[in-house]
Image (tube, rainbow, N blue to C red; front, side, top):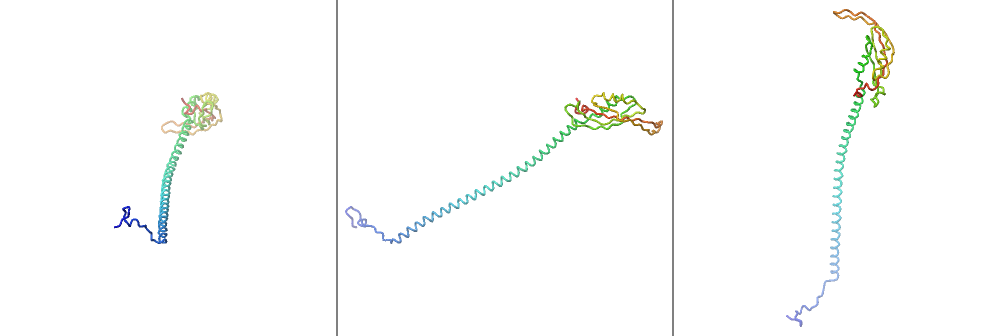
Length: 223
C-alpha cells in the first residue's frame, strides 16, 4: 500500500468529488423542505384539533354545570315556594290569633252585667229580655269608650214607677246611659198545671229601656 510523506494512506489524499447531478440535489432539498412543512402543517392541525377538543370539553363542562345550577335553582325556588306557603300560613295564623284575642277582649261578661242590672230592680220587676250589641275593639281607655249598647226589657204584673229603676241602672258601674223607651201591657193566658191550682189570666206590663255600657264590661278589661 502506498503512503505519503506524512504517513497517511495514499487514497486519503485524493479529493472527494460529488458526482450527484444538481437536479437530484435540488430535488432532495425540496423534498426535505416539503417534509419539514408537512410536519409543520401536521403539527398545526394537531394543535387545532387539540384546541377544538379542549374548547368542546370546556363547553360541555360549562353546559353540565349550568344544567346542575338550573336544577339547584329550581329546587331552591320550590323550597322558597314551600316556605312562602308556610310563611303565609303562619301570617294567617298570627292574624287569626290576633283577631281571636281582640274578639275575646271584646266579649262582654254577660252574666255579671245582667245580674248587676237585675239586682237594682224594684220588687215585682224582673229582667225578661234584652237585645244588646257588642261595640268596637277594646281600647286603652275602657271607661271612656262605648262597649255594649241596645235595649233591656223589664216586666211586672202590676204597673210600677219605672223612673227609680232607670236611675238605679244609670248608677251602676260601667253604665254610660239608660233611658225609658216605651211601656206596653198585654193580657197573659191562664196557665193550667196538672195537680195544681190554675193561674188565672192577668195583665203584664213591659218596660223597654235603651242602655249603653262602657268597655269595662268586656271580659278582657277585668283585673
